[in-house]
Length: 475
Image (cartoon, rainbow, N blue to C red; front, top):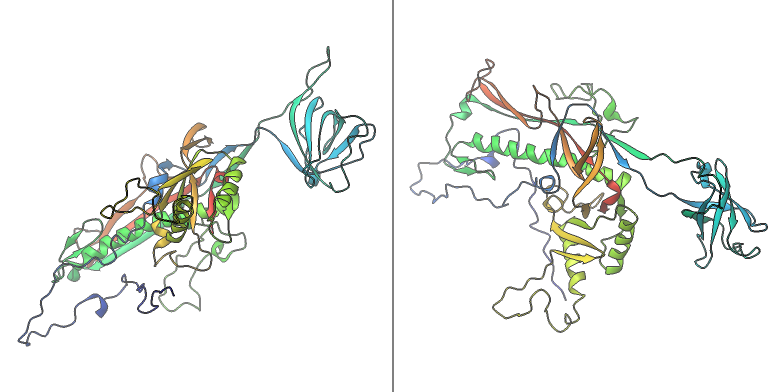
């Protein structure tokens, strides 16, 4: 019988960052009358390693300035048009009327040749030339013999696309023309803030524990640790807000002015403003991209379906998979199973295995139609964030590599941009990418008579997810 991990003691996720001084943050045993002194370790032990999760957008995106409350861009439409769910009349003498679904406007033109395909019967398809075009319908003349151009009763709807044109000698040119179609998208930046404050007296308090943080700050002053952890936490928020952000719905409470009410305790903090939200990466993919749900894709046939969907989108040759731990293991197991010698022993990855050689049981990528590069995303594994969630969990995302050509409304011209990039507010006099400043009368600040130092953090930014139809989210 397979073993299991005991439920207790479990993962400790009680916050260590608190607003007040608590016994859990400081040593309380200062009994110097004892004849025995403890053997103490001065330096803090970093039991959770690097706790910051900010890295994803630095790897896949870029940061560009913007000077507007709205960021707009346009993305290319399809080059060709295909109509689905079309209905049809009787093919009398090889002439047939095709009607578009939902009263769509027809952009086909007389003289174009079309392919008609049944959506129910795989063996039924015809080719014809368009004779005339109406607002939401068109009439075709079949190339097949009269009487052999009727769909069976099993066919109720058809798909139609143009594959060329044909005209008689001496006739006039093509009637009408088609305009290029662009899809326009926009997003708005949000203002992200944080603050750390410490009293002047506490800044002069020296402890016996040498503190350290992920960015190298160290010393025997506890406020240094708290200030730097606030900074690290704010940098994580900058990324998480771009990933998790959602626009406020039209009737949401977030759009209402937030102000104190009877339900608030005296002195409770409110931001006093509306919160319109912003479209983060997850929301953009769920709205305009591709969603895989119901379990991780764990077989090659699953990735075949993913590749076939990508074929219908932008057909980007290289893609990066950012996954949680379980999804990463699932892909490793799937790829390992492709080794014909795997049942009798492990041979994949190393051609000269020995008992003294480290065995690599993981894969960094694979090629199946397109190239997929796999990496773990710490944000999806962190126990204090998305790690271990049940409701609304995300197991991974597929992000296309490279750049895309879009029309930048601010620059007024076409520009190459990464599929994912951050736009922050900036002008000649104000740069809001990452602002930090101090107020108070301690720690070098001299802006007020308050006996404390306040360190403020602010950024105003939005994420642009270009070509979201090329992304996948795995839920």
